[in-house]
Image (cartoon, rainbow, N blue to C red; front, side, top):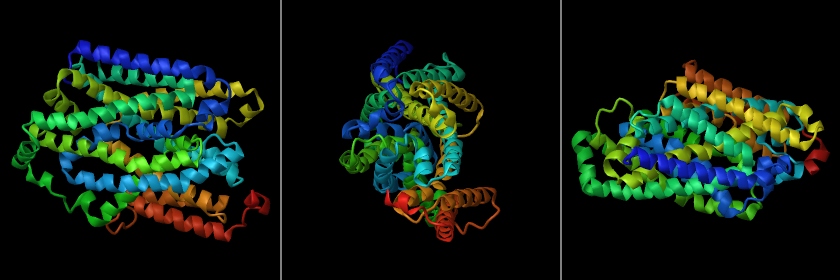
Length: 479
């Protein structure tokens, strides 16, 4: 990616050394208790919390998937995602994250599924949430590993096979996550988030200059395919489809269990407020370069068989060698900053929400069992990443649309005192049934995307079932 193999190896070595050191520094505190290992003791301040959320949120979906999507759909991809995301994500952080943090601390809950199981007095709700979180998180992890493996293999000119690159990514994330838990992933996210933010801003200006300036780069795109410079009216750009996707992309982020658990780790509401104020600006600064790299790439490299390769091609052709090595690290950092959180969150949920007898043993047993389960999760993700033949955006889209069906339960669960366990289970079931029927073409969509109707069904059935079922006890409501 614009650098020699020696430079790439050096950059990779420095990166691995830094994250390993951070993992070791966090190790001693991580083993002190499950709360410290899974939630960093609920002490993340505004700076670390922001970088932990920002780094975890912006995976290879933004650095590889969005340029690949813009390569085929054009400049309208920015309007398809960024404005709604920048406004919707902070609102959902406050609407769900703030009360979830307070309730989780009061109830001693360490995972999202455990939080709602205790809050709604139903282990069944916890099991259902664990199952759905896992079902939709694994594909999201798969696309991250696929992206990193593709970029590493391309950057090494095929010297490192795709399977070897994917295995290396999984192992590095597994090691430092297992060592230091939430605190290690939060600290490394500060480092990793800084890497890909600096790179994307530098790449935007340097690529433009290398192509003769912004006007020249856009003119080249106009010559190859002028349709890429106007917003389309079909597919995802059709008004109802655009509105549907806007809801999906804005509402799903807080549903990511690895994001919600970070919100639960905040030191207080003041830290969360500061994060919400900074998020729109930071997302805009990241998404603008991501979209333009893909659009400019369509003019520079028309006819690519795999659009996900455009990020590497553009960095290799239009960036200095040293910055090209940083570009490789940017993708690696974006992947790691999400993969580590996902591994940790899934392992914590299986311990806290499934392996109930462990609560009767020493607290340290939970940490070690979580580490062992992390290895199993990593093995499954690696296997799927090597065998799932679909684009980065395609895999991510399935996960995002599935997460949307969980949103009604998460919002109503912390904002409506009349919401019940029956309502939660009915909402989850209805939302996913409608989503699957929409995917299969079994129901009319009237121009909207399947997750739109899954979201509507989740809210309607959840509210109706709650009103028809007995309310929670007065003691629980008072608490």
